[in-house]
Length: 199
Image (cartoon, rainbow, N blue to C red; front, side, top):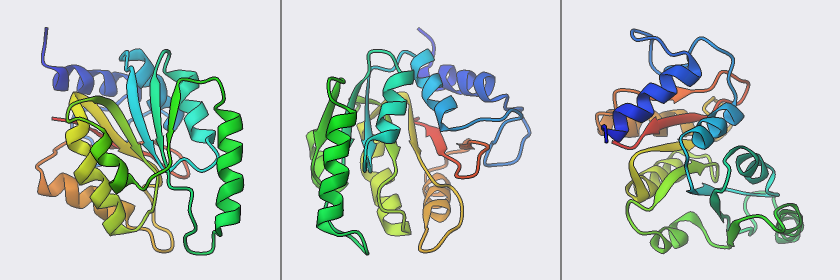
């Protein structure tokens, strides 16, 4: 068997039409969305993953539709924050339960930090981070879930752009720079997803 990091990197370059010498973060030369990323996971044969920040399960359903046979852990406390009340979160949770009924999912009603201990190191094929979007929360999620990934699997998340109280760009940049991750990627869409390979 070859090196899984190189194999995944080759698959990313092919799927997203990335060229050597492109500027970071790599966007590729082809229109892409987060669904393109999920299709890649399916093509790589991924079988177990976690999504942080689930809300009504819309993105969860998109992952399940594109990654055949995957077991998806859906992590969200579904509790009040900022201007979102507990009653609104209860409605989101009920919609999520209905949307994902009969699917191979496990809804974990915890914060990402309370849930991280539920996973062994090296047990996940992917993580998709879309919870709280401030710098400290995004960076904490990356730091704590990166070890849960298998070598050559994919750490990813949503909303790599600037908006109010967003620290996504800075958190991803800081993690990659601090850990000598020389290649990371974003999709070419209005609200890009970011991702990089677990080395």
